[in-house]
Each structure stands twice: as structure tokens, then as C-alpha cells.
Amino acid sequence: EPEVTQTPSHQVTQMGQEVILRCVPISNHLYFYWYRQILGQKVEFLVSFYNNEISEKSEIFDDQFSVERPDGSNFTLKIRSTKLEDSAMYFCASLARRHLNTEAFFGQGTRLTVV
Amino acid sequence: SQQGEEDPQALSIQEGENATMNCSYKTSINNLQWYRQNSGRGLVHLILIRSNEREKHSGRLRVTLDTSKKSSSLLITASRAADTASYFCAYTGRWGAQKLVFGQGTRLTINP
Image: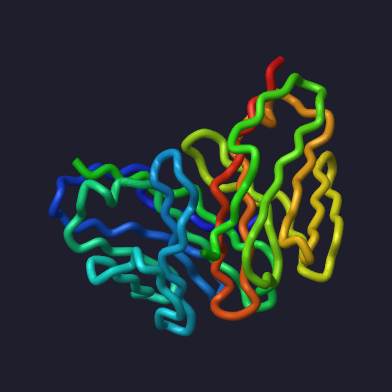
């Protein structure tokens, strides 16, 4: 079964550094999402991406965050200057148009630790 | 707030018993989904129920949806130790980019 893959599985970075989290969505999917989960808390929506542009973003997704689909297969989340509070699990998800009313497919997540 | 709310926050039962988790929400929904998460791991999709459905079954899982009360429940029958995990409800609204709004989750522990 096709799956969403995320790399790396775990990244440790120093405060103030830039990080790029990578995702390869399922190939024929058209909608892409990033979510984050701070340890022990619920999963929170960050941003959705469709037709090469952001379609919706949350209050969390401020100027420090950006997303890109650089080559038609990867979907990246960049945090420009990481803060301690950015430490969380980040999940990528994708959805096919014909699956708009079915489940999103989630990657296994990237655990980001900011020190 | 559009956030889903779940109860209980934690549930501990004996293996073989049934586990029921509840979820409430505050807006009109397109569908409601349940996910499982083992400690520190990824999200595993369990079941989706559409806004025009009232009950759905999948193996040992039974999900109900009451749109008049804006609530859903997940029943796991004949629980097993391997069912120990956190369970989240998540819904999509009627409009927009089909983002998922997650509840706080229920931490389920099955004691052998």
C-alpha cells in the first residue's frame, strides 16, 4: 500500500538554527498538510497546501514557518529560526481529490528537539 | 472553539472488557475520524464516519455519530493488551481545505 514517508525520523537542532522537515506524499495525492504534536498534547493543524499554494494556515504557522513543494514529489516544512517551543512531533499528511471525504494518510512523523 | 473534546482523558480496563471513548465537537462537520497512536509513534487511521451516517463497524470497533448532540463514541470490544494506546477523534469541517481538528485524546490502558 502506498504510504507517506517523512525524513528524518528524529532531528536535534540548536535554538536559532533553521530546520527543514521533508515529506514525500503519496504520488497521486493533491492536498498536503503539516500537523504538529507537542509531547503529551493533541495534534494541531499547521498548514494545508493545494495547487502549489497555501490554502489554509493556523495561528501557529507564523512568519518563521514556510512550506514548499520544490520538485513535484517532496513537500517540505521549514522553520527559519527554531525556538525551544518548536520541539514537537511533526506529521505530514496527504489526501487525494477523490478521497476528499475519506482519511488523510499520515507519515510516521519527525520528532524535532530544539536545544 | 472548534476543538474536539474527548472523555475520559484516561481509561484503564482489564483485558477482555469493552472500552468506550467519547468525543464532542462544536461545529458542523463533513466527517469524523478516529486515530490510534502508540506512545511517541505515528497516527494510525482506524475508522471514518460521515456526517450522514449514524453507526459504523470495523472488526472490533464500533463508532457512532450523533450530529444533533455533536458527539461521537468509539467502542472497542473484547479489548487486548495490544489495544493500549492513545485514541484521538478528529473531524473535518464542511468547508475549507479538509484540515483535521483533533481532540485531546483518551489514553487507554488494557491490563492483562
